[in-house]
Length: 341
Image (cartoon, rainbow, N blue to C red; front, side, top):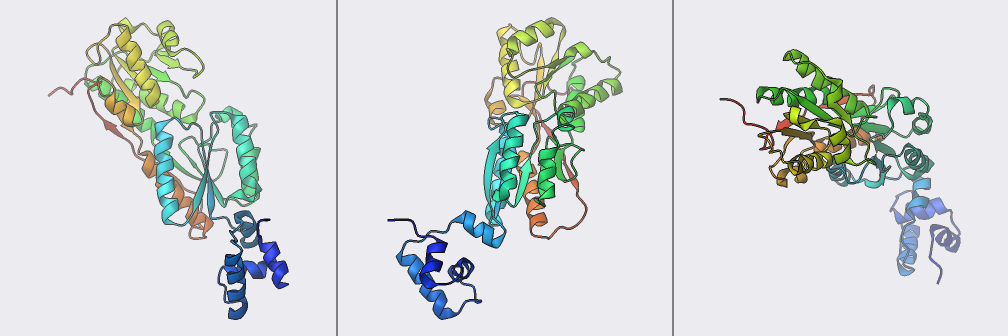
């Protein structure tokens, strides 16, 4: 038995597809007698709405595309959770896509979302500023088709849209100050997000703290990490652990790996080397010792991004684009020394 569709119902009643859609949705534009007849016929034949067909008729999908760089990063999981909470409350569904840190995949995903699959897009871009200058067209197509977009975390000034970010410069500054105030003087930075604007901002915050406290900046202590490379080998080659008393790490998974590597070399945390990471997820609570982390409030970022986007879609916000800055806080645990009394 073939699946019943709006078109086949319309053919049975000799009316338009639009009339059938309105009747099924209980529109008073259709007479009560015809509405009831169509609804009874649809129910008797086990009709289930074809969302794509209805979207074309109604010109909206009540669906949002969410594009994140990495499904395994706890920060993005937190953001996604916040987005889902708001979408559920406001009657929207989401399509979640991961670019796996690939600009080529990001382009393909946005090309798909541009096809009318969604009413709007929330995205954290994987591309560096240098890449975006030649790969900006996939964002322009969204704008040309008047599909609202909110960028979060990894954003760019090359695209004019609403944005939700954390104060990354201030976050790294405060983390570095905490190192210094607990006695650290030789602080390294492990940066697995070198191509992103947030990595650059965090390094600037680190340098600002050193300068303010009268400590010299040593470029050799900034260690870029390629996810495809061996972390332990890279750090062993790049850092002389004997001369380091603090390490600031720019994501949670890498923080845990760095802590394991430091302990495997015979150093005690925080007695010999103190460690602070970014993203206050579950991993950081249960490593040994529990890790001091910068909490970026991912759920709150997701909630804000979702509300801003839906307000744009529903015409509740017609003002100029805004950039909302979310403050971070330092969650102090046992991977750093106690503050002096």
